[in-house]
Image (cartoon, rainbow, N blue to C red):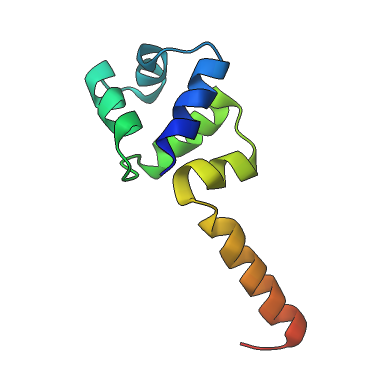
Length: 86
């Protein structure tokens, strides 16, 4: 997980950890722990809430939570489909 990018997007939107904690229904301490952890500790529903709260594009979402892995897999799948490989 890209913790720097997550924090940068939060700051860019003029939000505090407390604001996101409230949106997620968790404590500020839990939000701090999740935001500062290199490991993705967010549940899928929390990630979707953060997409809305931070107005993230797919690319930003992928970069923050999956280190661009979703895009890489989608490209590989599309490439296999166009070449006829399974």
